[in-house]
Length: 133
Image (tube, rainbow, N blue to C red):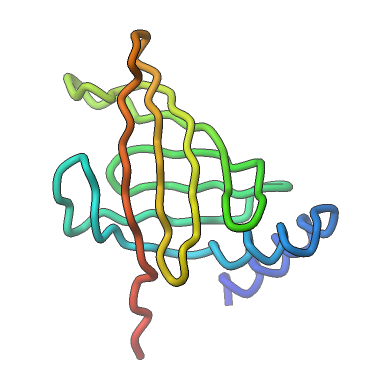
């Protein structure tokens, strides 16, 4: 029920976007689980896309959040920040992020602003979580 209400609100907000952009963004809504990354295996890592104003927000269960404001099939772009988590090298760092749909997979490229060059890039691949009955 909540997912349906979120979908309706998001679809309404996306009416100003092109039909392709609205469709792509709507298809991202919900929970995705990580299946590969260059940042170390994480069998429990997930990301959750939600409607947020005229765009999307994405929240990761490992401590980051981003606002996605630019969508163009099959890519969606935005920016975010890692939570402050003590001594972790990403703690409190800002980043830019791109999500790219390839079939039923979602590829993420996150460029982290550490204040020096070259900026580290974290890559991840996600798939839909199983919503079994």
